[in-house]
Image 1: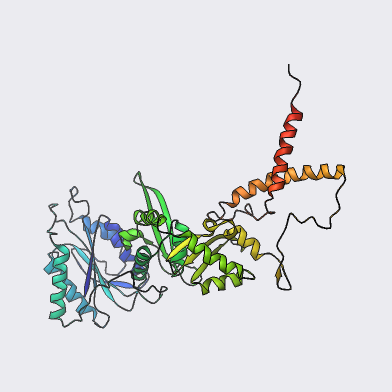
Image 2: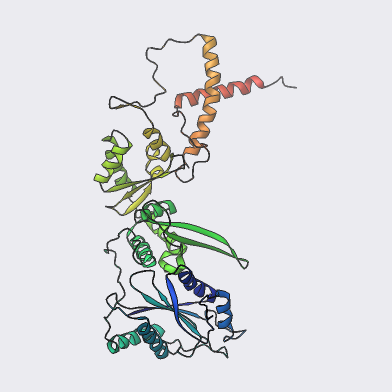
Length: 431
């Protein structure tokens, strides 16, 4: 049996979390001590919090008075509710919390049923209970209970960089799977942005989002993780990084950004991507060729189906790189244009701005009008290409970043010359 102990400051959060399981019919209360339970079974979270506070001092120095304990028997131990309650009560007694106010929940959201206990570590006088060697004492108690009740010996799952990562199993322990995957990705992979981080997590049906705001006048910046199905839809309530572990925190992830900067070999990845593209006839073929080289191409689309983000995930080097960092030709706009380029008899028709063969030269008047048109056109082209540099990291906003004509260096030089000439013409006589 494995015992996990979390020490925190939010009594309401711990009770609310377990209350959600009851509301979703995935758990129920087995027992309570010094806490009033309504006869109809309808538990009020705020009412239960008030019950706890009645046994806690109004003022105290303990900043983290809440203990949230989960007792996890081995999957092969099939225990009745009465057995679980007896074992959990004995665990609390031996740990020194038997006389404290507590509530015991049974969770049934996964095949491996387990116990959650919410209690406090301060007495009515405000004195903190003995927490010396708490985790060591807890381990000794669970070992004694395994021997006394003939339970299977359960050990915490050990995670190493070589542990394989699999997609989330909706029928399994979602929180544990998300935590293990996030930990392994942080240990094994290299990435420099949240988009690259999500490209890796997305392979295992997980998404990470930033959360910023203010609570009680204090600013906070954190991360939230979502468990998804194959269609990208959430299958559980989001998990705050603090519930998964320090390795999932914003500080830890941003630290990984910095450490990865020196370790990523852009040139090696670009060579493999360039070879794959040179041998590909279209985007679908490109994706297949990349897979042959151990690279997943992660594309992000707008609601209208336009590509607005590109990330190459190289499994060989355990690296994720945004397309624009490899080069302009691998950016979102470039792949979107390539994907929409018409194909005739197996030949991709690439647009060209410099093909002047078999064209008659226009007369002077027509040429002047054409230059005026080019000047206006290039002003838009420059702006469009400036925005293209950032199109991998921002969503499409109503077609604002749609692909335009290719940039032409000669036209741009002509445009600058015309602008200088116009400025000279506008100058009046010197006074």
